[in-house]
Length: 455
Image (cartoon, rainbow, N blue to C red; front, side, top):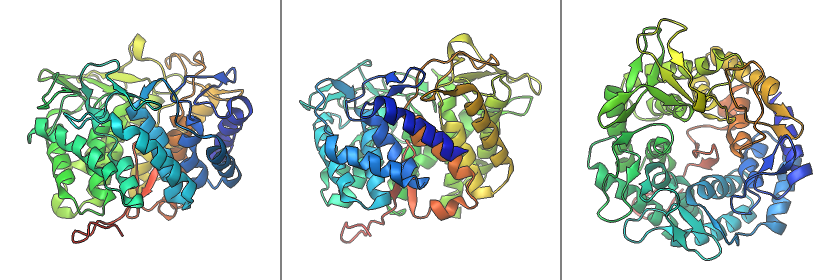
């Protein structure tokens, strides 16, 4: 039962780690510090609202009103604080209409604005929320997904406050990527952090470091009621090249997205890349027919089936962090897991693809897939205070890692819950809502060209 799972994770966190960013679910102790801003609360609010867990939602709101501040004096990830905290607050506002969430989102966005690099327009990798000082972090350049996955959240702030600075900063970051992309469609994950912006490596991926740039191109177009075609056009360019260069099918019938290194395909797929199954059917169904490539929906179904098989074929029925494909492998013998990618972090992307496929097709097989994944999560990951990542999905009873990412409540449980609703469209209609990369729903507002206002 998805309600029971959400209540278990929330009450464990409330009992043992209330107000902390993250909790270790086996021991009920403090996990990582992300910004000292109760990140698990902010990231869970939209799920609590959608599941109608109003008592828990109100508990979270009370903490936000009384205790939330953004004065942490250490560097935090600009990208993660945007998608988890700013997105969580923006969505809580969009869903509930309660002004406190917009006030707090604006406070955070004002702290983040100085972190955009004046030369390139890209956000710095890390930012000190207390001082506004941006730093480079682990990578000397700019990571594609980090520059291309802050737009929905910042644009929502401009829509709601009437202050154009937030959208202008985020949109500039995306247009800076376009300067380097120059019509080529696919963009390597490494970009320079000096102007003029150029490619800093030659690795193309829909997994870690690349993924959500492509997702946001489509969603930016849909967020403002299909009134800004530049984003859609860039997305279509990328999809055309992806279909031609990166989509493969094994002899055993599994369709997957390869990566590309220096122009050569690498037949490896991150669990993160499973989102493409949802993205392709979303584009196929939300864009006008004249824009749609007939290959998209068939590929979406194929990728979603492959992502389900990543779970189904492991003894634990949980999926690894990444999978290698043997193109010539026979049915049942075409995927491999290697040692340093055998862990499962409670990731949402397969559940996301399954949800989008079910939303548009209504095919009951997607509920069966979601049910099997949820069953494995219950049986293999449930611990005293929540749910834990596991070390090796190739084992029947894998060792727990004592980690619970905030996205488990934000995304994984939300997507699974929505897949089991009698009619998901009644709760979230994709003609009225767009989901951020952290599964936070934001209301679609049409931009009227003459005034620049949103309705």
